[in-house]
Image (cartoon, rainbow, N blue to C red):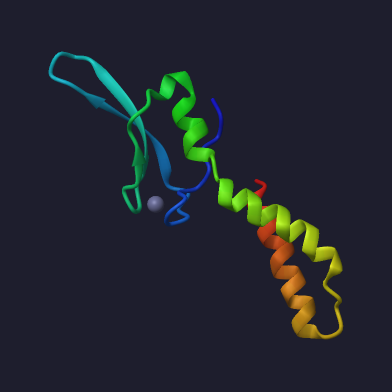
Length: 97
Ligand SMILES: [Zn+2]
């Protein structure tokens, strides 16, 4: 099974797949953030669409690509700029995990 990314709303790593059990013993799984309670419940987790939807971050991907393009062009002329480059590099690393 694919690894779940942190919650897109609060950033918590405390996310998981939970199962609801109905009175007729039918079950339904959904992806849920234990911190802010965000969830995807319109899909069945077993068909992997829910995981793909949970992990889909189109705006983050666009920003990440823009940052990767811009970062090599930022000149490091002082400590403040150097720390900005470090912060951006760490953010890229975290986003690609
Ligand atoms: Zn959350």
